[in-house]
Length: 87
Ligand code: SF4
Image (cartoon, rainbow, N blue to C red; front, side, top):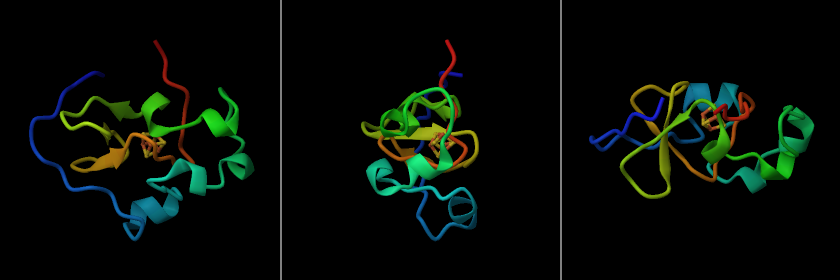
C-alpha cells in the first residue's frame, strides 16, 4: 500500500461531508483524539502519518488516504477512523 501519487490531488477540507462524518482535522492536536479512544497508540501519538489507511504521496507533508479517494490529507491530520499502521 505504498503507492506514490504523481498527480496533484485536492486537499480534504473540514467541510467535506466525509471529513465531517469522520471528524477529520488537518491538525490532529486540535481533534478530540482522547474522546475517540482509538486503540493501538496513545491518542497524542495518533496522526495520519502512522495510520493504516494512509498511502505515500509525492508531496511533502501530505498523504493519500484510502477513505478519501482522489484527495490528499495532511500528514499531521487525524480522523475517527484512525487505525495503527501495520507492517
Ligand atoms: S483514515 Fe487515517 S489517514 Fe485517513 S484521514 Fe483518517 S487518520 Fe488520516
